[in-house]
Image (cartoon, rainbow, N blue to C red):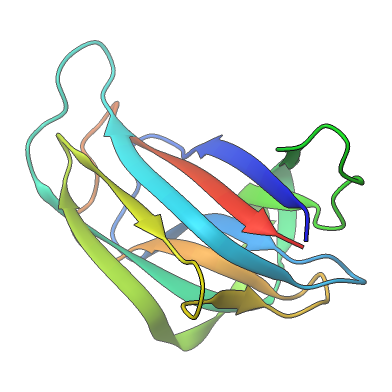
Length: 155
């Protein structure tokens, strides 16, 4: 399986219970999330220290994306990705499953690096409606603060 990466930045001041990224599977192929790195960047200064919780939920409808970050091949000899990449803004939000399949909490002045390898797998089944969405379920981010995230996945 080939590996790909997409790095995104959210909008500033993400409200609680807001989706800020959706890693979308391809119309003709599924994907396996292998690593997710999440952090927070403030405007010109140090991020305000607060606890944040980010959940992963399955997307069951992609919504209407207005910004999508295309995946980059980790091996330049790999074939182009089937996945369109990571949606970060929408005119119509994606539809998400009601249940959270994973969540993590961290301090805004640090970050989190989550590997899924071997028997641990997070899979988005094939079809552009299917994805793995990141949702800010805890505190709202302060003004001028945004999430950064890098998705590493296999197809």
